[in-house]
Length: 578
Image (cartoon, rainbow, N blue to C red; front, side):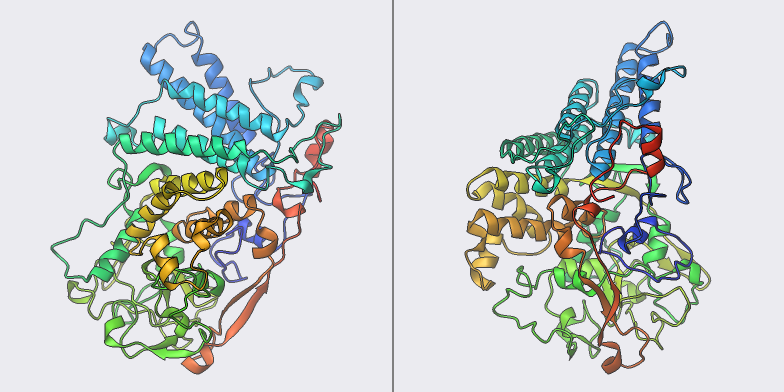
């Protein structure tokens, strides 16, 4: 919610998102929102990552000493230490992603450390990268390739997880925000040391592509593959609905049963998230407001981001006209698995790729799930979003602000009964194999003079699963820029849009847009939605501005350090603009 992907009611009824307050321009240096540097006085949970790093250091220093911790077998000791090194690297990376260059905390300071020891200054960003990559490399030898005891140990760190995070770190370091960014020419510490290198280094992309390929090979060797819905004999569903369940299932199928999830976090369970996303659907089965909050609302620009059914951007498709995309159109029978037959909705909602219908729900759109009437996708649940309808904005605080709902995050096993609602929870996927494929294609494209077949192949793996033709075929046949995919710059645009679509609503967009240095472009656009308070189609399908978002560059690319922390540690310097 920190970027522009999800909007909600300004009432903040039922939950508070400090990330969303940042999205509304409320970040500050006196009491930073989502303060993970010092974690003080925060409404979220008060945690900070330096405390987590200190816990790792204390653990490593003591467990490494067999005289202090004698009752461990050698292999168990080595594995625990490797896991702690991974976590130490991971917490450093999370801080780096937020703040840029950070102090490297390699050991725990004694409680009686003098002032000079405690006041650690920020290390240059590239030095931070080398440090965390080195920690991950140290951990690899003592991490298992896969989890054998899946009942008791699923979620513990493996080699593919460590390699995937290494690839993500190197991809971040190679990206424009941190690789040759002239905006940071004056960003130096008090000793005059440059904290972010302003000289572009193309070899960083090569390091990132190599790391991503090693991570992919390790993941595939451990049995990971792209998820496909296995089907069910209990339900009679169309190929269109099966495709949607494949796309949704890549995220929502449970960790351990989902061959695509390289790392799922059992301590971060998608429970309330589903309640917050779910629209109210069935007027005949009363649902308490708390069971379907329908508050998470993607702006219209997110709906426009998905491809046409021909697999190209809607403003490039030469065979489908989306110039009047806000006008009304009525669905015909052939479209019934996406939109209710005979229902009038925006032209924008027609002729779209399967991920559009799997990820988004909207007025007139279908919402197939386990308890659909007749155990079929014929005459399944329909979202009815106008103000006088079941999913409409007719309940203070518990409504959808834009007219689009996040369908993707709700497991299809969600069910209504006459007096209750049940959701099947799932561990949040920190790393999917699709993410690794996209990382590799991006880094490989950037490291070369022009895209190769291997770049296309890894994007096409994801497109094929999504029900689309190859990049080459789709652009050659349907795009007004038919050779776009043949150039490095053109392929960069394609890969970035593919990544934004495939990983939509998974917490990736905000960080990707910032590392690409595109936040000034994308986070300074108006957040728009339909006129949700209106009862008729003609009134409802008028675009309204929900919020005029703004992003100040270069200030907002990095989190502020709390002003008080700069007083406590005078060796620190503040991030530019704060």
